[in-house]
Length: 349
Image (cartoon, rainbow, N blue to C red; front, side):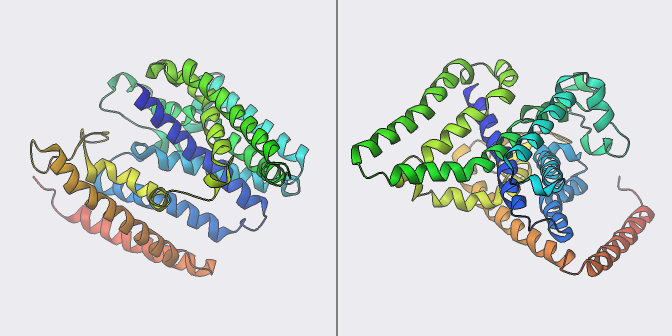
């Protein structure tokens, strides 16, 4: 259960970055462009859509794509409306309070509101999911989206709030490091570390050790604790601030691709709309050999697909929006011709 709970925290950290990174970007006031918005949506969804079309899976099987797209759009909308308030203490806190209230209404009030929004015929197909392993949810095809997005429904707001305070936190660290007395610097650092460790230990004891179902109930309200503690500890000492793990930084560029390709290259699924359950068995009965064979291929294809996606993105969404319309119209026509030809071909046995 603790492995499952740890994975939930990692995913929450990923969603936290959606709020944190986009807040900093949009607060600068230079990112509200049609091209950047289209490129962002393309980057988040191209590979997921491609795999869905190729394998006839539903879009929500790769729920990370839907979740990050949804929360990114919400963050962009929040930052776009009333841009003059994005640097104001009252303005930012008012915006985030409204976000929190809306999330509570959508997820924690009557289910009718959630279904009215995501069950709308215009978007229902994107958020519906029919899990072959959970036929008990067949009558509620929005359950998977409610569950997945609901687990991290608040953490992106925490990310935005912490992005607003990051300059003040940096000033605090600079003040500590600039203190002329060595023992007081050590004392302040110790207080900072203790302030991060104490709630983390409480969270670990009372929350993290729960079984997965009990943990899921607490996760939306507590996932900010380990994430915040990590951020404080990571920046508490100069030796930690000045170093990073290169491998993690490198692979972090390709997390979207590694997430999707784990389903079909690194592991094997249970069939249509199936989740990955076991390592791909190239040589039956030889687990470590299979791990050694599949992992390099899996990582290489993920990196390669990232570069392919960005190349296609730049080609399909150039600087000139008029050119963008022309290229998408041409691609749409080509896709329509291919579809028409496919309909004329005899079905395979």
